[in-house]
Length: 288
Image 1 (cartoon, rainbow, N blue to C red):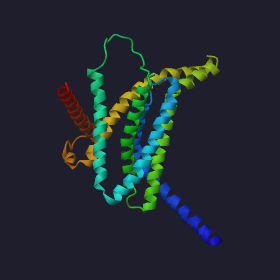
Image 2: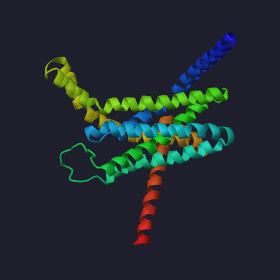
Image 3: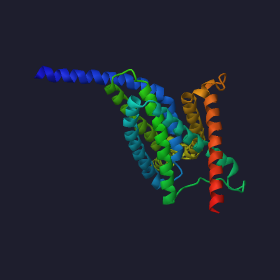
Image 4: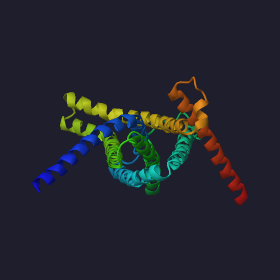
């Protein structure tokens, strides 16, 4: 009886060792997309009143966990029964990411409010409807990026047993959510940490200087993340197209891979924006 119990423990230990090894490999392969996920979601989680930042971030985090709970089992089932569906889903998700990224670029260059000489101020959302809209957008974007993370993680363990596949992909999915949104939480609360350091030090000494740096750095980091997040949307979408559309394998073959992927995301994103704008105008004409 005791020997059987210890044999089970030994099997579990061996399984955990195998999962640790495969999870490490999968984490390395998903590191790039996790960086993009961080940039995109950090940008989407900012711009709210200080009292609403953590509640908004928690709402997005819960949405991200739900996304993983939906994506992981479906990805495993589709990979087993209908592998081609994964590519189709990835490409459709890439279209959404490309559209969202290029739409931001178009909005910035062609639909910015004037006057130009007005003092730049941080835009803070204090409207509940706007808050819900931004949360919904962040969760949808997270859903698409999560598909990419899960598929890449799954692709790294296709030769392993089903049990190891399930556990490895689940570990990566959980780490992606906890890691990404944990770092985002630290970023959005930088200013509060800075204010506390200044207050605790009596506005004197090294701690006060560090606190002031944190406070002053947050708006800069937010602006940088906004730009990086937009570029990441286009780049990630281009990577999806480059790896899942056979025709594109032979387009711009001499270009560096990152430049190729950005070009694909930008071109297809522009086409998507043009199609959406055209359809909206046609619907407006028909209704008018």
